[in-house]
Length: 183
Image 1 (cartoon, helix red, strand yellow):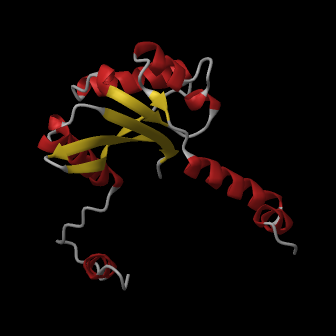
Image 2 (spheres, rainbow, N blue to C red; image 1 turned 180 degrees about the horizontal axis):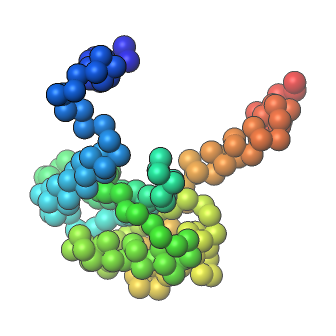
Image 3 (cartoon, rainbow, N blue to C red; image 1 turned 60 degrees about the vertical axis):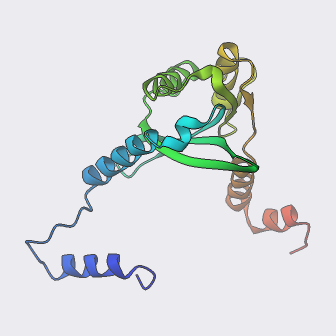
């Protein structure tokens, strides 16, 4: 709380029982805020001027145990001699069904809704689960069947996170082994 005085003040009001204060902390209003921010980002003029994109989708369970997939858009902006790579959070999408077919449909429907032509994508990044990154039937394969130029970029952060999680679940000795040291 020492890092965010505004949030600290808001939480203090709640604790003191100020019945007439508006707090905007419910999951419903937070979801509404995220949708508004996502919709606003889609209207961002800079992203409309870019020609080629890369997409990243990653899912996680929210506090209500619903699977939420975040959508990140990467694009390059060229202004004279200045080249800038931009990564923008777009939105959360509630994901129902965990099959590659279902997730692919969700992604394609979202890109269509955002008026982003799948043929302008040059990259796709996902967690390294087989359903997403699988070479035969994964989401990346299904997207490549539509646009062969949308190359998969493996997400090394997910791999490192999974390795650390696995090592921690089997014991401290594994962490030392991973780091090349002896306990």
